Image 1 (spheres, rainbow, N blue to C red):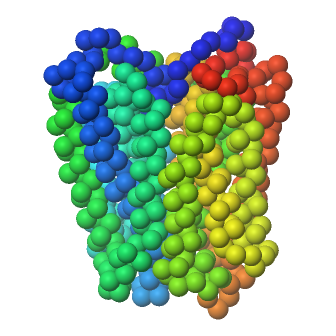
Image 2 (cartoon, rainbow, N blue to C red):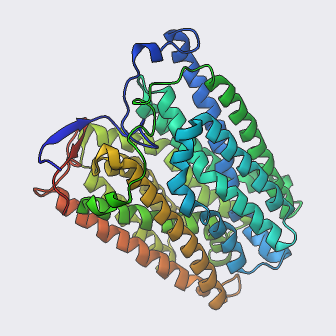
Image 3 (cartoon, rainbow, N blue to C red):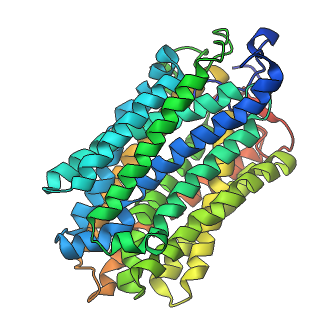
Length: 460
């Protein structure tokens, strides 16, 4: 790479997250004219929001029923953990091939196929008997979920490539959080459903993914009215996956990748699998109250994520923001395991961490690699995230079973908390190293305000 810095648009319209560019004039005449397109694209965003919110609800539907599965089905914590760990298994290869599928058949069509897998997967999950049927359902759900996320994000990039992509993507992420928040508080707003046992809540999740599937069908029909952009403007235009590129990433990329993988591997297994049952057993909350406390992590992120993204664009200091956000996670697990402080304190810390890091880490990661390598970079990150989330889901369940964690032995959750705390502290060390490197001569502009800058300094 050369030694010059170059301006780059926010990472939004190349493959999955790459450079946003304005389509040429002929590409703007959508739905019969630009004014109609400007109005219509917000309807498209609304449909995409329905698709992602319904599927995120289904992903997070296991945690609220974990105690019911344990009490009424006799599930061990390892079995509960497998229900979310198995979701990550298909994402290991699909994170690399999902973008290729999008390139070949289009973002809208890929979204429909992925949403179909999601709906089909929730049906055997809701049937749930025998156990292998439920596990198979979660596996099918996982096959579609990662491709669905990338496809929808690419769709947002296509429709908003003429302007407003950053705001649209912030809203996209916020609507995903709405789905998770709704799942966490479902024992409150759907109390009658939970009164029927473990199965009706999972049927509700299947119904919502069915609605998502219908929204994906409508989205595809509308997307057919949008003229295809020239290949050089379309997502994926930077070429195919190049394995040799893995050796050419700058050291800063490996630091931020470590944070990305470690953060996801800690946050999602805890919050989406074990947090609610931990709050019930160790903190003696009811199911509804435990779900409410857990839900506020995502409720905070719904509104705060776009704010932190705007702050990073306005004032820079991205490495500093990431370091602060990463530091909050080990603090959270220390408070949960070593104190009797109010759960709202740990919830606030985790919510702040989950608001800062996703808002800053994705655009920052794109600044650390060349545009033509962005597909490789994000594919690698998603593969390792899937491995990490699957492994820590299984490890947490196994630790809880070995320590006989439960309502009669709340102290049995200590090994799980120590594990999550140590992994999150490792993420903090990685981003602290990134902050130090970015402050020196090998920086990539993460601390600069304004338009994103990508360094093409030699890899080190």
